[in-house]
Amino acid sequence: MLAMGLGAVVLQALEGPPTLQLQAKLKAELAAFQAEFGACLPRGALEELLGTALRAQAHGVSGLGNSSEASNWDLPSALLFTVSILTTTGYGHMAPLSEGGKAFCVIYAALGLPASLALVAALRHCLMPVFSHLGTWVANRWQLALDQAALLQATGLGLLVAGIFVLLPALVLWGLQGDRSLLETIYFCFGSLSTISLGDLLPGSGRSLHPVIYQLGQFALLGYLLLGLLAMLLAVETFTELPQVCAVVKFFGASTPVTAEDQDGIMSQDELALNNLPPATPACEQAWAC
Image (cartoon, rainbow, N blue to C red; front, side):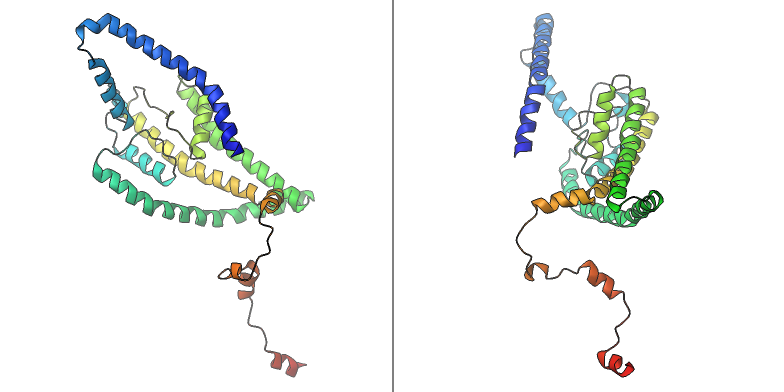
């Protein structure tokens, strides 16, 4: 509650004045347009036209003559849309118009999200031991304690993911799109990898790009999402396994003793390890051997 309240107060203070300035600027431009061309337009015609354009824009349909977005549901755009659903990124740059498309999205997400989680869990199970072996090698190589080696490993992986999947793509986008600042491109990359993208920024949107270049950009963004989200997940998982983080979680955990009922149906790691051992020698055979 404290974090939500603090975030709301800060955003209200930061975003309130620019929003009011933009609203005043828009009203002034509309008033100037009405004063210049009002005699040629029926009353309310401009508001009706703008409302129609904004409703179409909400579904990713633009009438500004941008050739790169002439077909919203071509294969690259549709693939990016499905990936944004399965990764819960949800750029909001396009949305289904038909009733069938909306119903299919519900079924597709209901079936696809668990499958995506299962795939990510399988990849994590395969990749995490690699980083664990790396941390062990670092600890043995530099004679570090295990907690120090784990902290060094998590820090190095976090910096590597931030450099390769946030800073480097942000620099590339900043160089390719001259109308975006470096802060905006970093904001877009971090928003994509944290799956909190608000859809206000999308590479290539609103620009007259060649259709081939635009489609290649869609494929590149698709691959970036898949690889970047996996790398981000591995980095977060590495940090959550740090002894310091586990101590904080344990501090805020439940202090009540765990009962036998709470452990029903749960197999501990020791039991899993014992299941792999050869069968024990019966007591009578041990006595006979003695």
